Image (cartoon, rainbow, N blue to C red; front, side, top):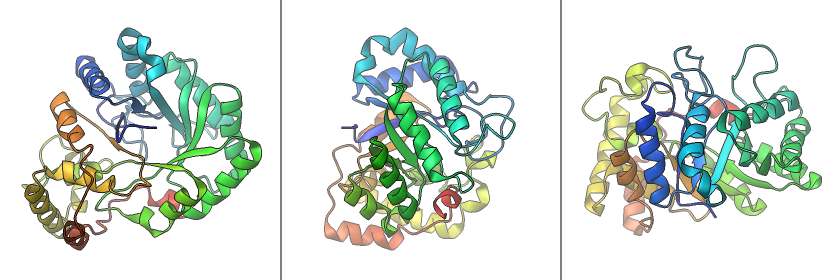
Amino acid sequence: MLPEISLGLWQNFGDDRPLTTQRAILRRAFDLGITHFDLANNYGGLAPAETLRADNSPYGSAEINFGRVMREDLRPYRDELIISTKAGYDMWPGPYGDHGSRKYLLASLDQSLGRMGLDYVDIFYSHRFDPDTPLEETMGALDSAVRSGKALYAGISSYSAERTVEAASILRRLGTPLLIHQPSYSMLNRWIEGGLLDVLEREGIGCIAFSPLAQGVLTGKYLGGVPTGSRASLDGSLSSDQISDRVLAHVRALAAIAEARGQSLAQLALSWALRDPRVTSVLIGASSVAQLEENLAAAGHSDFTEEELSAIDRDAVDAGINIWAASSAH
């Protein structure tokens, strides 16, 4: 029972953005029906969760900033909110601040609760599969988090279909169901259609898709070149050389389909990702209230004709931008 569109705080909620802007986005999101806010332990650093740490905006800053807005604005509505966090990527130096060990996950959860000023999170995720830690240990940590009352539900992110089956089986034996899977998914990154969605349906696990706008490529912002200050211009989680002429040709064709539907390209991308009933929710980011409002207009418009879907399929092709593929390759 998540909203069709949820708000993720991976980007735009660190110390590099004014807290007043963050507060305005979060408050407006809740007023417009977004009840789910998605975080992770290291969100907020200028470097993305999957690359090197940026010292000028420390890991954890998104949780700290969200915690302040929670304390000052959203506290009366805690029981109307789903708040999630994760652990699995680089968080602190040393061998116990990364990947999937019990020590890392449970220590990280305690730290996340402290930064956000919460007694519990609604969903706690294993952020990625760890080939060097037994899956029983990682899932056992999620089970412990739920049994301790520090999380209400357990989730995984970027696990392959095969590992998802194994994780669900382990958690079922432990008595803590695997509630939800968070994979990357967009018109330019369709890997979950190769078996994962079938597994989720069969296992009764929800799917919440992150990066449905392909890190901004499906907003159309790069059709005229790489704007200064954009994600690709910073060569972090999205590099300028990933936005090739071939990819942009497909994006232009998709933009024409969106226009014919009376939607922006971003709205089309979100509606398309929600077309499959197995997709519970899509996670968007937002750098402004106006951007948030535009994207939320996609909710409730995921009906497509067969002709539209066929046209989209011709240009909804893999663009080589799935930077999380390594996790789901195991």
